[in-house]
Amino acid sequence: MRELIEFIAKALVDYPDEVRVSEVQAEVTTVIELRVAKSDLGKVIGKEGRTARAMRTLLTAASTKIKKRAVLEIIE
Image (cartoon, rainbow, N blue to C red; front, side, top):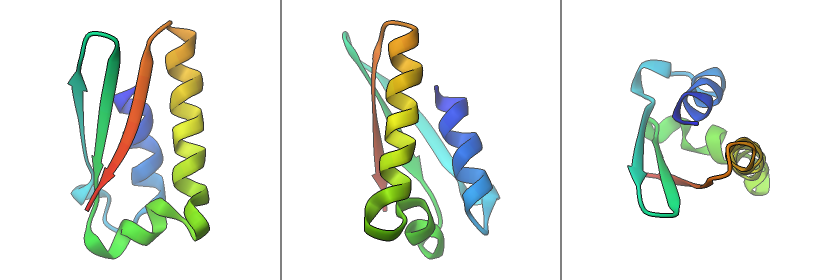
């Protein structure tokens, strides 16, 4: 799932080398933390949060398929 978010984020931003994705495992939930350059933050979030919502929907669908729960956090 980390690779999925990294692939999507790198396709959206102007500085793909600055995309950092980390995965924090818990018992039930996995937290995926996404960090991008400050100038690319708006592109990842999107107008009214639509892009971020779409990424979270894809992540939820992928995690449901493998019977786990994942949450995406976009960090400034």
